[in-house]
Length: 452
Image 1 (cartoon, rainbow, N blue to C red):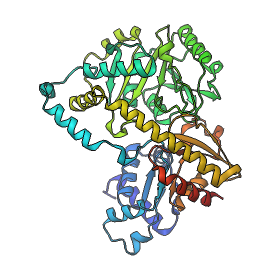
Image 2 (spheres, rainbow, N blue to C red):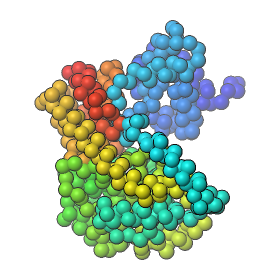
Image 3 (tube, rainbow, N blue to C red):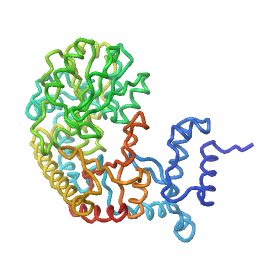
Image 4 (spheres, one colour):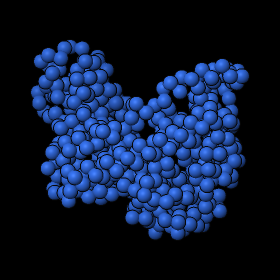
């Protein structure tokens, strides 16, 4: 009997088959969920297997796409037995990464962060570092967020309505427990990681088609206790919900006794659009739960988000989560409070907006120059990505693989679809949040060579 852990046994099988050539370079492996189902093991076992294969340089995980097989020629013939060096060699082949979620590594304000950290540690509030702190998050930070939302989004909310969390998914882990109905209406296509959060909490997903002006209200059902939407700039299509449809959605929520979860994830990046009012600011029924994040402008690694509850849900929230403590450390909250109070946040928003607008313009110009009528571009009015639809018969997997062979990483739209058979087969997400402006034209040139 093989006494090795199951994940090691699966790992050894993969290594053997990769070396034999059964899995080709850049071939996508089954998803964690699918492989776990096929092998009759837990998702944790498969995740451990894939983590070991990644650490040994055999595969790579591409966000929003999946795990792909790396070229192991150097691993076998001369990269050495220590796989960390081989992994670095494989990763170095990515010349241009058109990510839509990460930020440029140079953008983090390291020296300022150090200074504010020292200021926080030397402040009179340092005693708070020895206590659990406010359960909804530090009051000073919630006051800064409320002031920012009032100025930037026209929202009138009390700091007591704000809850600080360590990411949108953790926000939703709390929010889902505030509804008595176990059905959530979600945009189709829509955020796949958000979808998993609802599924893991026992919710039925009701896919609601996204039209050019937002979700199809006729597809909503009254048994949906929650509606998750990105109305200001839909992810991933870029659709913007007009005022009239927003009002209709609010009226539906009131009549159905439901709540709307409004994810305003990239409202700082509206380039060709007038400022779009969030649902929360026009909500006269107290039906909107507003989600905000620091990930898109500051850093996704910070893991700092927040939500704003309707006043009618506050009593239930306090009853259910009376003994829950804030998931973000006092020090991190204090640093961000100083960052906002001293005006750095506003300057940061203005800078990232300007940088991304220039990169967005460069993307559009480069695509037009190198690809012309061979592609169509949509969703460029705001956000941190555009959707590129490629003419011809090639599908997403092949387009992504061809790009990788040229050292260009682009991203699939497929994970955003619950019903995969309805997904466009030739659409690619091209992000510009992390890429340098100087790299846009050479990156798009290589991408054009890969596809055409």
